[in-house]
Image (cartoon, rainbow, N blue to C red; front, side):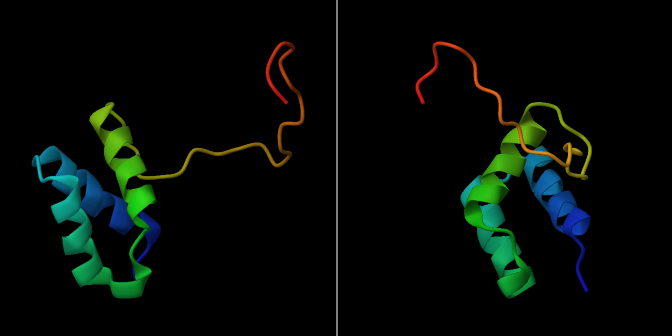
Length: 75
């Protein structure tokens, strides 16, 4: 069974080698079939790695969703 970190490692590898996102997506879909991340998630991870991220793990979030709003923002 493939774990999420393994799939992200492949994305990071392709990203550091300069592989275009579309080719990276095609390769991952061929390898992982229906277990592949969605195209939008792949693009998000590629962008994170381009910005210097090295961790393959998802950042922890608090268990409670944010309910506060900033004054002056559209609702």
